[in-house]
Amino acid sequence: MAKKTNQLFTSYFFVTISISIVLYVLGAFVFLVVNADEVSNDFKENIPLTIYLKESAKKIEINQLQKKISLKNYTKSTEFISKEQGAELLIKEIEEDFLEFLGTNPILNSIDVYLKAEFVKSDILYDIDNEFSKNEIVDEVRYDSPLVSLLNENLKKIKIGILVIASFFLTISILIINNSIRLSIYSDRMLIKTMQLVGATKSFIRKPFIKTHVNLGIVGSIIAIMFLYLSVIYLEKNVDEIYFLFDFKIIILLFVSLILFSIIITFICTFLATQKFLKSKIEQLY
Image (tube, rainbow, N blue to C red; front, side, top):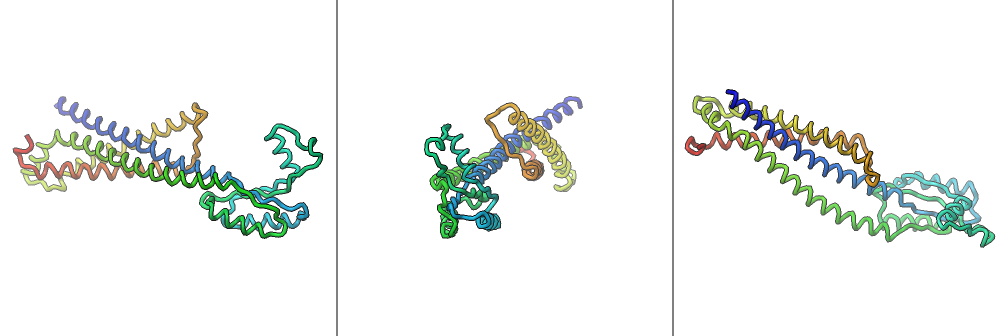
């Protein structure tokens, strides 16, 4: 009896640890993917489209233009940069006071427009350029077109690569969890067949196995979530080069998804494993 108990404990422990490790790796990968997307969006939203204003532009006209831009559906934020502020920024950048050399300030007043990530595309920026270039008080519109094109092209390639890797991880995860559950149920194959021979229905036989392994899946997912959370906190505090964008809703969604995934996959794998032994003949169980 003690030997059987030890075997069950070892089997359940192996299943739980297998699920924990698999879900931890899968969760870490998903978190990095989501975070990478958030970081790319944050980077996009910090690429300015700069509208330089003519010297003759009046303050009320500038305010009206800035308000008009702010009301556009593609605008995240705007910032007015006076010619004095522009000169100060340039002096800091080049580390030389060009005003002393030139004698006058050639910098124009400008409005930096920051777009929402989904609108940072070459064709949209081109349309915005054409729209505001026609304004009477606008001297010039500038934005980093090569950077935007390069960013969007590389993101497409990265997303395809991520999809392939995600599919691979998902497949491996399912196989590992399935094999660990099958090994766990294998030791009870004779019990399953005995119950079937004495008249127990298939659903009655499956029920305790499914309940047990679903519970193990939930425990495994909770362990994985705990270690995943601790890992992220550790990396954020100790590795300066790593920058995470935390969205509470996304984190909660990820954790809930891991729990649901563990419930669904353990249910399916346990159902299939018990079904195999229920269909097997007695001589096939040896």
